Image 1 (cartoon, rainbow, N blue to C red):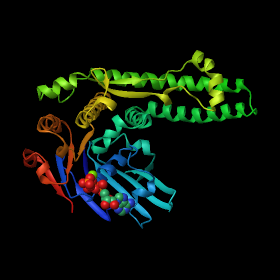
Image 2 (image 1 turned 90 degrees about the horizontal axis):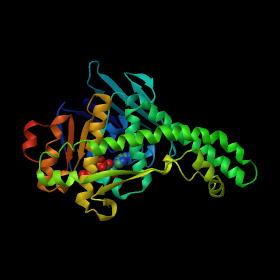
Image 3 (image 1 turned 90 degrees about the vertical axis):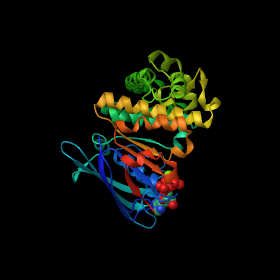
Image 4 (image 1 turned 135 degrees about the vertical axis):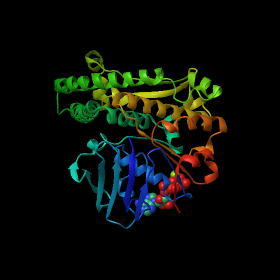
Length: 355
Ligand SMILES: Nc1ncnc2c1ncn2[C@@H]1O[C@H](COP(=O)(O)OP(=O)(O)OP(=O)(O)O)[C@@H](O)[C@H]1O
Ligand SMILES: [Mg+2]
């Protein structure tokens, strides 16, 4: 999978910007604030990953503008042009339209043609942030691979909202508990599918050889002792009925996949509390690379890898480890300064300079 070029109009700090990518390696160099992360964010949006940086869609449109566009051409047997148009209605509502070769589509359709794995400094949130950040990550990962997962998760979220409303009405005396039966049944059906897919995913993550393990013995050893542990909140009929009173009292559904979490575990210690920042960073990178492998196996094509300004924070051994994976798929690397990028990369990379 390769992105050939990107065209931005009024997106973030860019008025108009065209970028051509190498099918192999592109290095983007530009000072702080020149828009390197914004470029990766734009590709991420085209691939239907909901950006984690976005507070509101309004933030994506260049200050003072009312329309914006992201367009990217994707290589393939039949190259495709993916487009997102933004139209600012007001600060709270930005209308979005999605196109493939100028034909109107849904957001999820774009993910059939483009997948991006980004690794950057803010990804430390995955280790140290709230469970909802990890769940969101998990869901966007699995949804981009499997349309049925996407359907299940949207269905499940709707059921939770409806069920919670019924719970509240019961506690207020407007509804009767048997009204929950209908929602419980649906909840269990979706939850079963979601839990199964999540479990399968974690089995794969812990089974796959770290792609960059062979490169250096220290890193390899460390990665060998690293695992990702799903902490599921399982539901079934029996558990739901046992917890009914509790759910009614709380006015919300207290168990189910929407309460799942996972941990980064090194030798049975949770890295959230016991990892150094460098270790947390490597653990996230290892996770992302394992996810990239998972996608490759499931979809028979490798996602694009983007490394956002990571070299300046890695010691040389970890740099070596990272270098061993960049030849395996189209890769985009960003850095604020040339000096922080390993020299040998410039020999084979297309260089893009921002100012
Ligand atoms: N909606 C917007 N309109 C105009 N400018 C914006 C908008 N959103 C963000 N920016 C600007 O984009 C710039 C940040 O871009 P970005 O984070 O991509 O930079 P970067 O090159 O990755 O920098 P760093 O090296 O610090 O990571 C900031 O100057 C910010 O003010
Ligand atoms: Mg940046």
